[in-house]
Image (cartoon, rainbow, N blue to C red; front, side, top):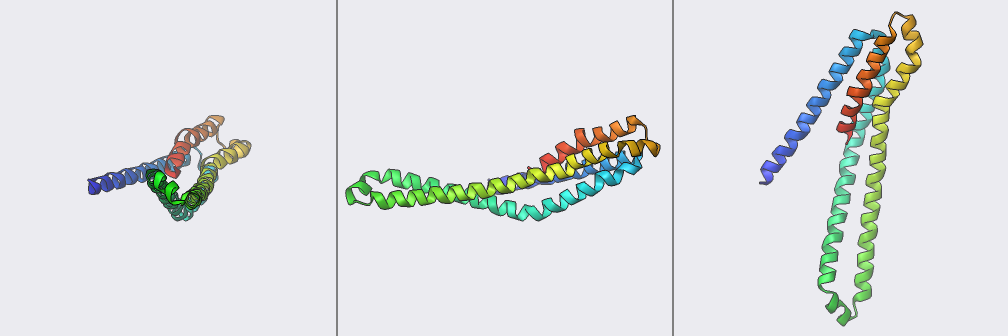
Length: 174
């Protein structure tokens, strides 16, 4: 069962990456056809976001593993302590058990907070890869129209980014 679970998980991750890559290629190619001058406005922030995602991935995995381990240790300790509560009280070890439980709660809290900080950084990656190109294209729209693009072309590029690229980046980063 474990092998199948790992295989299914890996297949899901590979499909996600494949779908993301195809989406990026489609968005960049569509933008190149509609508005070649807008490609750098789209591609540069996207590339920076992907590099940051690659740099952040090992830290994210580490923090997730730490949070899971802290949660498991807390759950195991809680079950053991509650199961032995009468014995702990009888032996006068209640205070020591309480200190140990509070220490595990604190470790879990620290691990969860560290994971939350990494998650916040992942949200910034979505903003950099999808929202910054939107702002750049909107700000550059007058210059793009002067260079021969139609307002419909600008709207088409914005649609590519907002409706296709942003959900793909969000899915990849999550």
